[in-house]
Length: 451
Ligand SMILES: Nc1ncnc2c1ncn2[C@@H]1O[C@H](COP(=O)(O)OP(=O)(O)OP(=O)(O)O)[C@@H](O)[C@H]1O
Ligand SMILES: [Mg+2]
Image 1 (tube, helix red, strand yellow):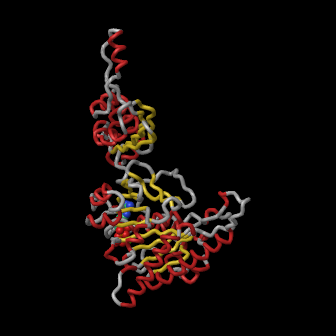
Image 2 (cartoon, helix red, strand yellow; image 1 turned 180 degrees about the vertical axis):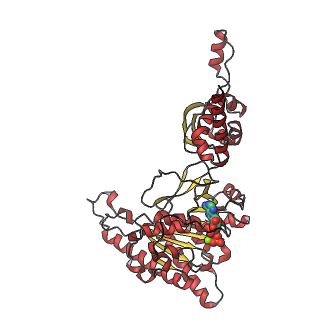
Image 3 (cartoon, protein in one colour; image 1 turned 30 degrees about the vertical axis):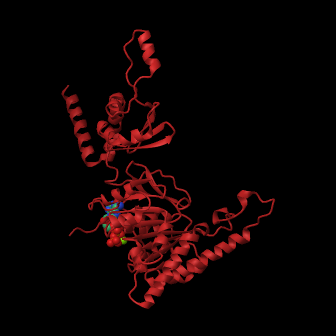
């Protein structure tokens, strides 16, 4: 008997320790079973307490009266499925007549407390069917990406959402993106994650890093073109516009619209071209964009106008030629001069890290979603990398990218250096490899010496 008690005590202590130190492991070992039982056992009473039940229908009341049975109780939405996941539970429910998805969305915070879960979000799958995604612990505290993710051409996993789902950057759906955030908020780490993921794809990477190249030059072996100052950036962007024009010439040459060509085969973008003719898509990463828009003299003002005009042209016309913009900056508003708001309007995918004022959050979401603005200004200072992402449909979510170190990103880029394509128009901007990228990098990350 005593060894059984000791074993039980050991299990309880282990569970407590796991819950405290390794919530993800606790969830997979104990948490998921306890939570599933809790949801199933308390379901009816919680739904009732949260006001998500409907009174019995008239015919059920009549039937009860006719058969001298007690009056039937109010009924909660029907459970269609309860699925455990790596980070929580997914509950699919069917609404009763008279209920709507907004009722459930409004009750998510009450459900979170009642089921003792860390977070609950709801979304309508189709008319009458709602999915409740519950997380068992704070998945954004220590981001661990799942091993199995859906990678596809021009679609890369970049962060984790607060409901435990993977957040993807899909260049075919949202061609251009804007990432804002105060200094030290995690923009460059987010961009580094993107580079590390894109490195394994058939894509040409072009970088403009006006912080003298400190963020992007160590990754140079996987970059087709790099610029570390506004003068080179202006010339590089001109070359990209030339490239865009030559891709359109190619598409036109392939565009044979005769009556016997089926609709689906008429090429209007690079993805319609046959594989052997398709030009490599290009992702242009710009870090600290404001540096490109600032000027102190007449000469610099001319350069600035040239840069912004090229960026606007690429944002407006680049998608079908396979040119995508990924712009990062601390602020990106009309105070940076003419052309900026026009450029911003073309950047569909918006991400805001911690910002210091509402105006900065408005630059990302003001024209999309007021709720997202509020969420962005509430990001705490002690969680760099935490961000709010939204798109032009008005939807938004909290995300956090994994903390990829520069060493890990360099290793990923070096591993895929042979994939770096040559783009003839950009040949003049091919980076001269710095010593950092040439020295063989150890596969295992080195631990910094403690002082
Ligand atoms: N996703 C993350 N998870 C954990 N820590 C992070 C994350 N992102 C950033 N950090 C921490 O925050 C620090 C600053 O991040 P980063 O350099 O990306 O900020 P930034 O917004 O680019 O700043 P700046 O505008 O000054 O360039 C990093 O060195 C890292 O320690
Ligand atoms: Mg930075």
